[in-house]
Length: 266
Image 1 (spheres, helix red, strand yellow):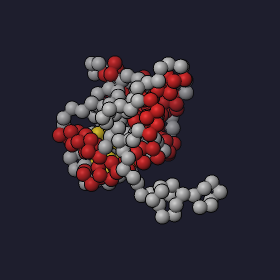
Image 2 (tube, rainbow, N blue to C red; image 1 turned 135 degrees about the horizontal axis):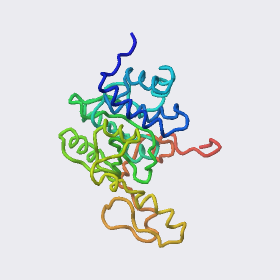
Image 3 (spheres, rainbow, N blue to C red; image 1 turned 180 degrees about the horizontal axis):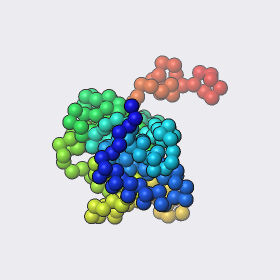
Image 4 (cartoon, helix red, strand yellow; image 1 turned 180 degrees about the vertical axis):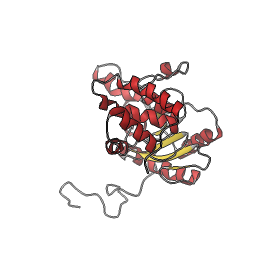
């Protein structure tokens, strides 16, 4: 069956916003990504009606719009929660504890990957690298950073979200729900007082290498504090806060296969 239309008042409002977005591009089809965020801000995911709307506004087929909407993981294809909680399980975050965080959150929330809690508050998913490796393991909520997480802090975070308590990201603006986040990603200003100023920039850990390259004094410890900060060369061997061994890698001295050389010789 053909996708239904938006109600007339919704269609009129979205057309006004869509025309503003399209006017920013010399080629109208270049506006497809922000338009998908726009329709996602209406219902919390990209519906068939949203796909049809984008196609009509840009002179594309629904197949062309669907191909893009299904390629990018930021577009949801089914109803989801007010808060998209993503746990990075890419290499560095995984070995620093991301896999454990994801597993414990699945059990804690009683959901699987890309599933939503019964109250409609939280959708949990594992995500790929978000360029925050210096703060691993990282959890993102509606694309705002929560750095240096542990299973305990991540569970407290989702409990606060479900209870309606205010939570603040490590870096970036205060949280808003997923629909509001999608509208901002569509290119419309965040009109909340102080939100733009809160966006900030790179943190100390991200800038440490740049400071050294410029010949500036070596920065102090930039990670979370776990007792007295190391000094001098001690930093090279200072243990991480996430040192729990993982029984996975062949390079692990305790691995039954033992380490493997470059040539494959043991």
